[in-house]
Length: 239
Image 1 (cartoon, rainbow, N blue to C red):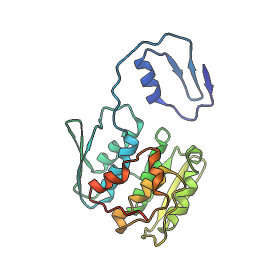
Image 2: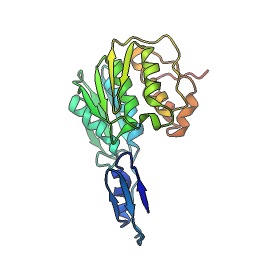
Image 3: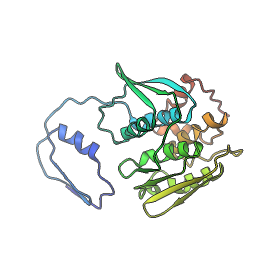
Image 4: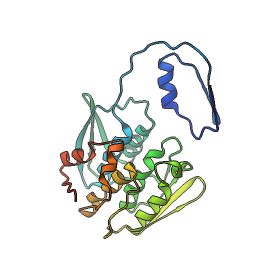
């Protein structure tokens, strides 16, 4: 079985397949899987780092944070775990606990001016909203497939962050955020995109509240999202 024109490497998928003794040949433009036998194997399903990313970005947005995340491992093969590395490099504190991690923020973060999202495009929205709210000018490269998701995420971020005074410009493979953040008076559109909604919900930390359309879209990947926010002390009202 041969797939051509691969947009980006999927090391996580290949790593799981190799646990079942499946030989996969992978390069920049194609994946080749030959007819072969599959061996049974045990595999523990770890918590989702894409979902965890919103709470890590919330910690970065807050003045001070201290909370636990269960069923998440720093020894995951998931690409989005790189966010934790970026944020701990910036000054966030992560401690391993039994079956999870503890996240703490005790001082302002020193964020990078550039992040590569080539292998982790799902981090674009929470990172963009976080950096915008922190008045941190930043460049994201490796963004060429963001327009191919549930919505055109480049355009969606441009429209919604503009409501907060932040300009998003984009080239072929990068987006750049600049501007002076202010809290929006308008309701945010979410474009039937679960990650747009969860990212924009983080602005309630900065502004006291965030008004969001179509909250039910979180059911696509994280139906318990609002309950988890309540567990952290947020008030969530549905109209």
